[in-house]
Length: 245
Image 1 (cartoon, rainbow, N blue to C red):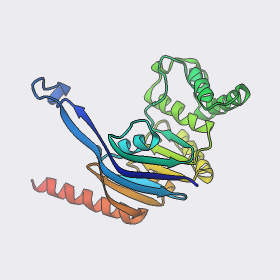
Image 2: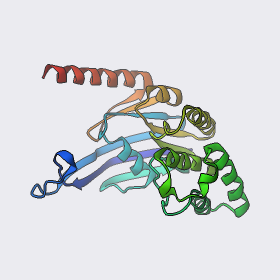
Image 3: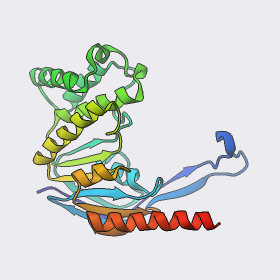
């Protein structure tokens, strides 16, 4: 059985405040932002969970903590089952290497034999439509090409837990539809999905539950439609208040 459990997890980071134009305030000193605060969560087999919340609410941080990409300051994170994550921003890809070299390296890290790696690489090249570009350094790729390469790496494994953070919209419409169908096939084999996206269409297609996150804390967790309605109401109220002021 696959599962995800977070018990009283907190994660914060420090930053320098900036002024207009992206310049830093040299005399402002370091500020601290709490991305997750005393976070408690349990996700079980069969849960397809959408993460809802405005930018900066803590969605991406939550995914990275679950994946083990970043470690919390306090609290306990427990997962059961093989995890595969797609963050859509080339995390885990080495830009100085070619796309082909990155794929081969990923296969080695997953302890696959050469024959299996070669087989999967050919499938990934065909699926991502990168063609001869697969031999170029990733540093020369467009953002869409990088997202395709990272997404293609999903084909290496059959994971119990899938973590997705945006990125699916990269590329043309034809590739996006291919990616959606591929995720459908992965979900038939995986046991848990946690998906952060601003696309209601994608969330409705892939998810059955939702978590509403605000300022690093869970505000609600339940059936997808119910939580989406609450989130929509919160956004509408916020817009109305902003117009009044």
